Each structure stands twice: as C-alpha cells, then as structure tokens.
Amino acid sequence: MGKLRFDLSVSLDGFVAGPNPSLEDPLGVGGEQLHDWAVATAAFRQRHGGAGGETGVDSDVLAEIAHSTGATVVGRRMFSGGQGPWQDDPNPNASWWGDDPPFGHPVFVLTHHAREPMTMKGGTTYTFVTTGIQDALEQARAAAGGKDVAIGGGADVANQYLRAGLVDEFQLHIVPVFLGGGARLLEGLPDFTKLQIECTQVLVSPTGVIHARYRVLN
Amino acid sequence: MGKLRFDLSVSLDGFVAGPNPSLEDPLGVGGEQLHDWAVATAAFRQRHGGAGGETGVDSDVLAEIAHSTGATVVGRRMFSGGQGPWQDDPNPNASWWGDDPPFGHPVFVLTHHAREPMTMKGGTTYTFVTTGIQDALEQARAAAGGKDVAIGGGADVANQYLRAGLVDEFQLHIVPVFLGGGARLLEGLPDFTKLQIECTQVLVSPTGVIHARYRVLN
Image (cartoon, rainbow over all chains, first blue to last red):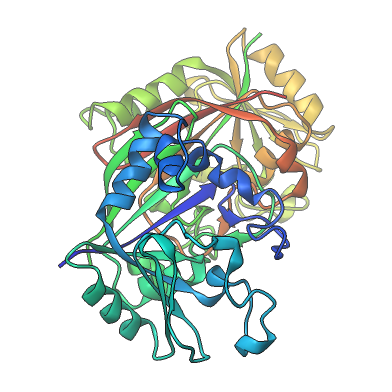
C-alpha cells in the first residue's frame, strides 16, 4: 500500500498562500511566487503538453512526485475556490484546473455537497466525497493502484490528516521569498507538538528552493 | 566592515520560541528543542568551558558563527526577560546568561532605560543603548573590529533591522519539530514582500536540521 503524503511550497515567513485569495488570484497576492520553481521545470511543461523548461533538481523533484502519486485528495476550495451549494459556486467546474488538469489520475474532492463524478482529459477524474477525510482516503487508496495518495491541499486539509495521524510523509519546498501574510503552514495547533518527525532527504536547487522530506514516526 | 546578520532556529511550523515564555522557561514551552542541535555540539561545549560533544555539520556551523561575529545586538527581553525600569526587573543582571556568557564579545542591549555598562568574564561586556537600533548598530560595528555584527534576538529585533533595510545576511536553522504556538519568525509584515533575497548556502546535519543562509539583495 502506498503512503499518504503531501507537498507544500512555503515562504520563508511560513505562508503557503499569499493574502486575499480570489478567483483571479487563487494563491493570494504574491502567492504564485511559491510555485515559480515548479512552473519553470521541464517536468511541469511535459505534464502540460509543452516542451522545454528547466532540467535539474526542481524538475526531478516534481517528476518524482508525479511518478509516485496514484490519487489525490483535495479540499473544496482547492478544487473550485468556492463553498456551499454547487449552484452558488462561481467556479463550479474548477475551470482554473483546465480540461486536462495536471493531476492525470483520480482526484477526490472533500465537500459537504454531493455531486456526480466528472471525467476530464488526460486521466483526471473528480469524485466528490461527502463522508469525511477517512473515507476519502480509503477511496483514494483503492484508486491509487498501490501508489501514494497525495493530499493536494489546501493547508487546512493537510492539517486535518496530520491531526488524524494518517500522514506518512510530507515534503516542504522552502522558497526564498517573503509573503507577509496569507495562509500559514500547519496553523499552530497544540497537538502538532506530539508529532515525532524525521528529516529523510534534503535537496537544494540552484533556484534557492530547499526540498525537505520528512517522515512522521508516530 | 563586517556584515549585519542574524541566526534564528525555527520550527517547521514557523516558530522561533514556544508559547508562554517565562523566567523558568525563557524559550517558551518546548522551545528548548529548537536549540538542542546547538547545545549538543563540541563547539558549544568548548565555548562554555566543557569538553566532548558532537562534531560535524552542526558544530561547524556554530563555530563559524562564533568565529565571524565581533559584537552582538540584543533586545531587552533577550537580555533579561523583563521590561520597564531596571529596579522592577526580576532578572536585572541577566543571570540566565551566567557570569561567563556565551557571547565572548561586546553585547549591545536595546532598552528604553539607561544603565551603566557591565563587564562579565570571558570577553562579554553589556552596553545599554537607549538611542535606537541604528545607533546600537553603529556602536556594535565600532566594537566588532571588522568582524560581523550579530542580531542576537529576539525575532522582533531582527524584524526591526530587516524593515530598516540594515540586514546583509541571515541564517535559518530549520529544526524538525512542531511547537504549535509561540513567537513567529518574521511576523507577517507586508513590507517584507519587498525584500529580495538569495539563498547562498544550505547545509544539512544528520540531526535533520537544515542550516540555510540567505543574502538580502536590496
């Protein structure tokens, strides 16, 4: 059985998204800087049907994630940016992910509002799970074919799985920028202090991004 | 002229001290875990007149800091933990730093309350500066003999120097623990987003601590 893991790009001041996220600016003001390292890579471009891009550590890290992941769980806001009933969601079909979303595998969307599954191009399917994080994980595991299940975000979903003791590994991509505000990595929860973790790998890119992998021991 | 730099140990959830700091627990609940990597090293023990300790990356990093630093600026709370007039401070002589403090060079204490300098064992002197961070830096530079000036903390003092555009370099020691609360690294200030920084060195210790150095470009 694959592992449950997540990847988060984080600024030096500890933010995983900038302030004031919106439909136009889903990662908040300045938040796209957290992902510049990924977007520039050959692995990213290849995945999106393009050519060229940077090879090297950043591209290798991204390719490893893509290769090892068989299914992804995401929060409703990561999917569409909205909340509440789907008919009130201004972006109900998650058009920002495109017709050929970058996942390329089954995606399970945590929501309180039931909905029929969607099949996209390139192997991405969206299944809407209203029965909680444990059930979403079980469905994702069944769909992952022995590969890892990724928590696609947001940070609050990663927090929920961490608190439930279900996360096996995570990787932080520590980006040399300051965002000054926004959504925090692992928003201070006292029970995080019980987590025993071990650093298992650190890779440093010429872009100054530190890719640090951690295993959860308990 | 030496550089102005600071070193901060930070938890994975972005804290430089744990919650509820006190005289007994100056780094807050769990905060001492941020400094375990340093305390265990041969460089630390040697500095404190002891022997033994771990050699390797952590010790080398600590020795480099000690070797390159000629003077340190600290905030009042870092010095004594107190505030207000000295006669009301329960720890006015900063006994937690000992008679032979680990600095071993001139230390400039930012305070609103004037006081005569103190001379300690081992080369540490305490000079109390009531005329602001710029003046404290000038005094420290004059005392540093061409070596670097370190901002000894707390994080709020580092923030003030960063905002004033006076910091040349900083090093984060990213420790694989979660603290769940406490004082944050570089507490979200919008003007940090203007800082242009470059990662200049990353060293990884077998203890899982990532030592990441950054240069401020503007």
